[in-house]
Length: 209
Image 1: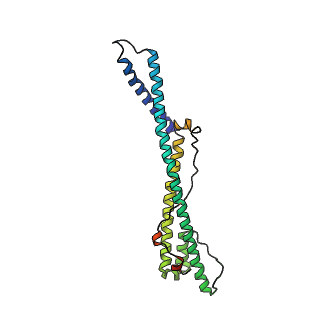
Image 2 (image 1 turned 180 degrees about the horizontal axis):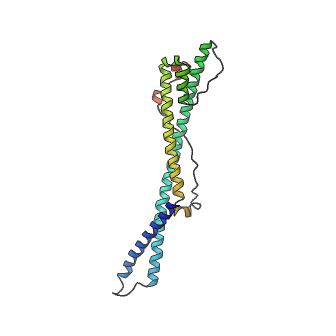
Image 3 (image 1 turned 30 degrees about the vertical axis):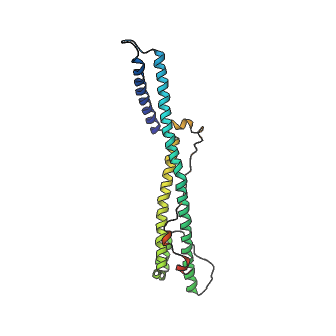
């Protein structure tokens, strides 16, 4: 609400300045000491009001469209990273299942592990199955999951910031007056990701799964 009040005050100041400046044009064609006719003054008042509102509307509308255009790209990034992370966590679960099957000498045992994050994988390897630390591929996978999760957090923050800026811009004055007419709907804060670190990806063969 404070932002809208400040915007309205600023636009009123700009409008008054433009109106006063516009009166100088007819005043130049009027003899000295004569006043600008009220009709002309009224026309200048209306024209400068329309110019002020129109300019502010165009600037803010373009700003909102710029934010809106950036949302799909961030969403794709988040979705791609989430897919990448899901694949890596599946690899991590398979590594632990294979290790448990080997330890119990029960090859082909049903999957019992479900790793849900890099932190959980690190705890399992360091505290429950330290023998896996000697496997370089496992260490690399652990590092990659951590990197993807960090990038995922960063991309989600960028997406949410972009969505928040867009939602705020369509509720600002004067765009809010034409929001429904222009079909500018609010976006809900979401998540998504990118295919990063592909060149150093750990394959199932490297992990022996």
